Image (cartoon, rainbow, N blue to C red; front, side):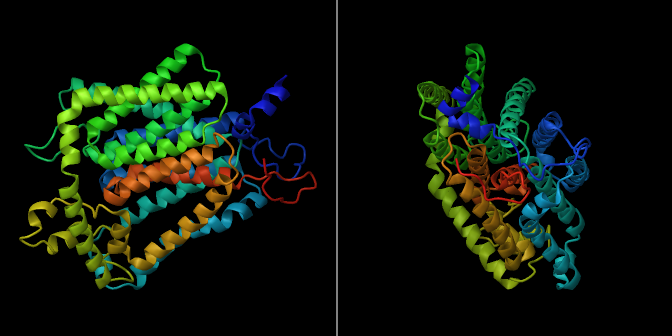
Length: 457
């Protein structure tokens, strides 16, 4: 009967597919390796840590960021030791991880051989170690992603733990009387930031969690009615919170990602009911949000054109500055000094409080040069190639597809805002990217022990 159920529901088979079968091991070879329960422990534990870092104002600041980096490096080393990847797995991941490490190698070269302005800011040490922590999370995620249904577990962990933070943090913030933490001065629309200082960053984090909640809602086909009501209520609440942040990028990015996610939902009757239930949740969230937040909501979108002009003027300025030092940039952590030095009477009123370029590509080019950006794009190309191969398999409810959409939300928010400049958001993205990469490269190997091409469904 179980076999018949799997044959009727290929999504269930895909989502719970076994990890790589690499070389029939000798007796006792795997006794020290992490089993399925320990893999689940690592995924849940790392997800809880990263959500906690987001809750603690995104670990902004060099002290908090450096402390988080120490934990990330320790976790990465622990996962490498416990998972004990086989040589075949390292050969599979090696080229992709090498491309991920190439930008860090370039930063070291820039500091050693670059001009004096690269070292002038004095922030190279903490900035570099924070990026080294991103690489450690990427490696840990990739190793865990090769095992079992780790992609589905990562999404479920993000949905549950992220929803707990969003709801509990919102209640605590409102009870403490500090619900408006927008930091934009008097006269601005009331905006909510949960436990963060920036509502746009909060909106990006909530949008990523909301898409994970949507995936969790759609893929739990056998959940009891009470649990389904709880899941729907949590999704409804998070959607309302996204509107309360007033982050237009987060709202638009989530809406587009949700449409794509629903496009790949299975076509069984039960799943169609789930899609209808999700549509009802979205309509209810929009209705409540329009009733409660309509003045601020409409005001934010009414100012979209003027805000976009400000962004474009800033981007043109920063793009021109990046051309002055295209090879090595101005140095890690130098943005505030560079921005302050180039303020004019025409732009000072708006741009004096810019702590980042509001575009992660220009931020990287300003601080580390365009060759650094090219190395990041090379890594993105290798990652995108692995993901696109998995995407084309058209398997319903593939966790790799949903993780890619979660990362796309972060990229959209980072393109027009500062989401990816917050260490905790970037750390979460690095870990999810590793999980997606490991899942996408997961292969089935015949018993003779040689690597085979990825099995087609």
